[in-house]
Image 1 (cartoon, rainbow, N blue to C red):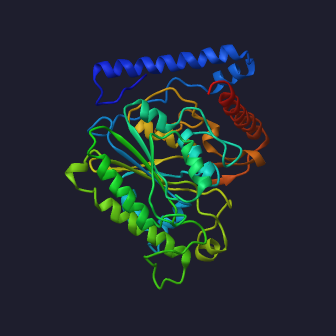
Image 2: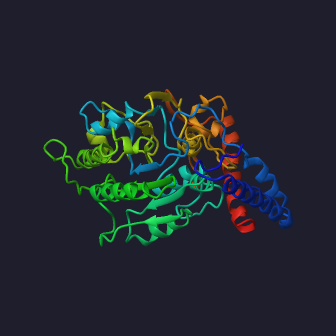
Length: 395
């Protein structure tokens, strides 16, 4: 099912539909002309003509403005901790569609961001994915897509973001390598308010950097301020809360959707172990439960059990929530499916170049058995081979 932008005219809808059909035909033509039978086989393995519709549209307005916040390295246990390190995030989880028993699918930031936006894997940090992305589907449904770069003077990161194919990238004139969380949220707030006046739906994405391991540039301190790990998460929580209060209970922004999640879990470094163990014991250094909430002023809060599924499911879940469908190559499936699709990849943490896999569930993390490995490894390696061939042949 194809779904156009809610503000488009019938003529604009027809044009968008024609472009979608034309682009699909062009892709098939290039596959046929390539003479690469392996590519055609892989294409048929990963291509889907639908995302799936597992939830009734819960919002009052079709095609609302959407803000997506990726927080650097955040495990759910930090939010749940009885010391109330991140009370604002905890409060908004209780007021949102809140997903529990949800894990990161890989590490670290480069793989984590692109993997969630494309619902796929890649070998190396800087590998591009030229398949269908969340932002491309949003664009095709009438959205202006914006990415906020919080590391404006990190050239590698800037080049990496430029390959994501957003309509525009916004950054700051800050001469530092990266923006503190107060600066990042101020930039985000200004962008949201500016975009809100343009008369078309906007999809705005930001990655905040202030919770990165070893950093302590916090304006807000936790307790006596002696624990740098607690400081940076308390600081991030404070500015997230300040940002949210600009839009909560404000009739002007009743259609605004805010999504809060992370690029990957918090690393289990010495600071983490010293701060949280033995009361919280990690089962894996790189994989853990992570937060995902979807907030809107008018939705009724719900807790959704992800049942161990992971952030490969992020893109199809958000699109399902927004009632947007489209062609895709997503490895993950919507979390609203209640695991009915029984997709093993949804529950596998992977660093493919190391063949390092774990399987996640409600009860925790474990090694894959031989049968599971023999299912998972060929699929992931096939997907990686497909993305490389797709870049060479189609794009």
